[in-house]
Image (cartoon, rainbow, N blue to C red; front, side):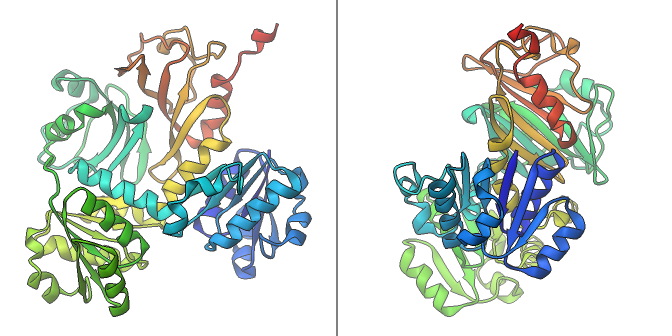
Length: 454
């Protein structure tokens, strides 16, 4: 596949990296020459210096030959115009744009085929807010990912030293836990492990578990995690993400305070929000946090544009008595550190954006593809085809790529946590975890058998 990626920031860089490593022909466009120099030293892609909304630059990128255009610059206008040119000048099959303005985000009909004809619009801030709300709904979890229309969840959390499962293997966990759950992967000392029945759970392990949605709180309680619903929330930062988050929290009836350094921004937030208290000040000020009774907070959520400040604010809030803290983090290098230093969860807009885009580029009847951990692994949801190699055989007899685990199946509204004897049937919604390097092999398994045409 030939794809054009516009924008060489965190999202554009990673999308180009993923696509090129999977054998696709990628052209990356950006106006920042220095950034493109860095890209050329690290990625096997063609680079073009210029604006992605320029017809001349897109012609140079051979837009007429592209099968996909992904516009993920920091400018909504550039992204929209690039997709519009792709639709009107070359009829590119798939057009994806990052749209950050909240007002545009609330007008989805503007982007359908009758108007701008954009196939997928992604708002990173909106995705970050969804992640935060989900984490507050399931206190105790560090990540919560939805599959099968919300019926199945992949829940991630760190194992505490006091957990009864420390020192027990996965077979012992299955015997002790009264319910169906499957530990799909473990991060230990920054390494991703694909566990077997004999794998022993250790303190500080970061584990991913597939489970039916109605059983999430029961699972968290089993591992000694809190399960109470949040009522009082502090938000550090007054940008777009903070505004979206406060609007959602107000709808859920939660008591919310926003701390923002800019006076004019505080005034704007106060005019837009009904019940949220907006405080002018520094979210990393111990005096301000104590004065506002941070010790009564169920959650402290740091969503400024400064990732280091977010981490500092979250740690300080926890030290001063906040029950739980979340951070907005974009840099993948920081993700592994968060559970180790005592912060309870991460909102990663970049990772959520990449996950939304990935399902457009996967073969087979794939519904979604979500990056995990350091993005070396993915959780993939697909619909089993009658003609694919994965259907009609016990899972134990199928030659999956090394490191691949079938985590859960949805069949006629029934959630199945599979064993080696489980047989996948046509039409099943199946979720698996696999290493990203194995994606081409997985795609081959999921698509039509060659003898189907014989």
